[in-house]
Image 1 (cartoon, rainbow, N blue to C red):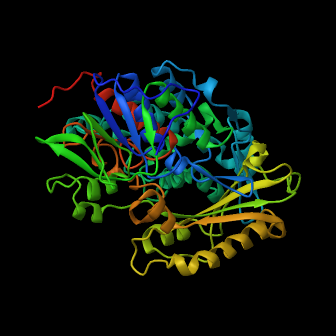
Image 2 (spheres, rainbow, N blue to C red):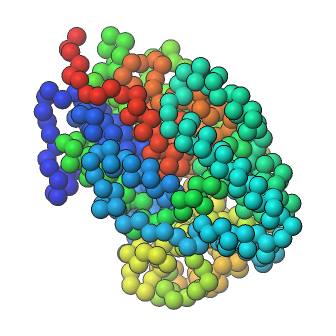
Image 3 (cartoon, one colour):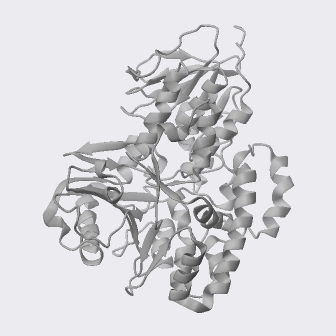
Length: 515
């Protein structure tokens, strides 16, 4: 079905405007649709879900809003620039709130670490844990800034589909020791293992193993400090809805409950898409926000393609996720020491990461990210109630002797509940009023995510920049890719930036002559 927001214009059906079809109404796809609409295309977005946002969508249960995927906004200027490109004001459409603290990390020994953007307060936190590491921490921040300027502001905001573009920057990669891992770089600067974890865990938020992904990703420490960590009132789903409304206002449309089964071709270039229903939507260009692995394995039927099934089988994918969403009744003033974002660090760091990424083993111990949006946003729950989600990184579905989630879903949920009860929110289970869980099976089935992974292709150095699926297809003129599996990568700033790269590759709309 096609939904039109009543506050905006009916989709423009001007036959003289070239047509762009966007596969997927995730954040990358919606950002691409906005960019294309601003360039003069008549855009039709097609999504298999019944709401916009993809992994950034939400569901409701017993009055609780469960934000299914991303919960934080970093580098908000990429969103403001996107809106500006469309002649709009982001802050007029979305209510963004700065977090203070950004998050709290709790360690097994009872100590904790609160991150925020104030240099003096951050230095005090470091000194409180390990005064001897203060000088190393200051060096780490300088290292992070250098990698941000190069990795995000330069490489992350331009296409890397030409090998010469990579060759030109290889010396810079060498100077910045991009061959080292995030953890190795943190360990070089600080000695305290708690600080090493606090400075190196960020790749997990984009599907990366901190002990093996390139140290370029320490740039996250700089972007957090420089631009803050924010929350969108109404959740990231509110951003997705605002994006869909811009698409409508540009004369585009978003069709829900329809799955694309094939990217159509004619005379060696894209010609549109075919839906599972059999309907064909002709188009001058096609943008796929479906996972890059799904796009190449299932949507491109040509046998001649850079990302063949064999290559996809050799690819290292991000971990899976177990997420338990639950609501509690009458607890709004309870557990006053539990903030909006909390990370419960388990008793093992490297051992647990190896179990998840390398061995494919579901360990008995765990680390959890706990989201409590009602601290900031009362709309996420009925009056006086709370909404939570607890996220545990787990192996994806592709390992030998993989986890049987049909059998383990409830067992693992109970293990998560025990950790929460003993370490964060004692007695919470007697207050539960709503509950839902997602396993890698749900990520596979809901988002068509290869192996049920949470963040597409893992961002190792050999799977980044030119080595990652490109934003413009080598196989089919007129086909472009955006989203977590493409350059520059996963995470909200990454997928929004992938659409910025797309905007630089696609020409301003000119009607393509009929052949």
